[in-house]
Length: 76
Image 1: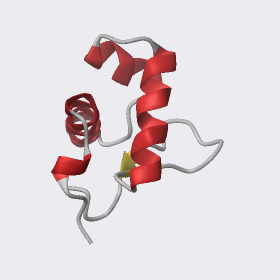
Image 2: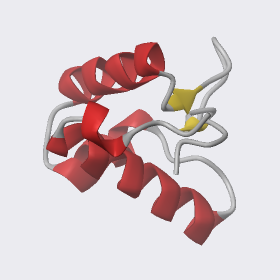
Image 3: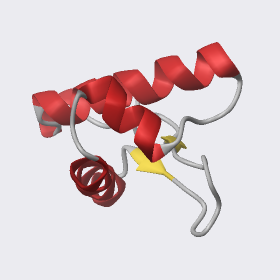
């Protein structure tokens, strides 16, 4: 079931867009540092946003695997 965009804050939506775009451009997932730079926030804030998106089911990752953040199926 797709995530309702109304459930996401504007910053979370911006992070999803950056994650999707950077992944498509490069062919692999961006690092948290790259996402943070893209959003103009610190890495800690970016992690916080990613965790909130994980709880909402908008993103997924493989624990302990670098560059594994991706949009969850049906998130866009």
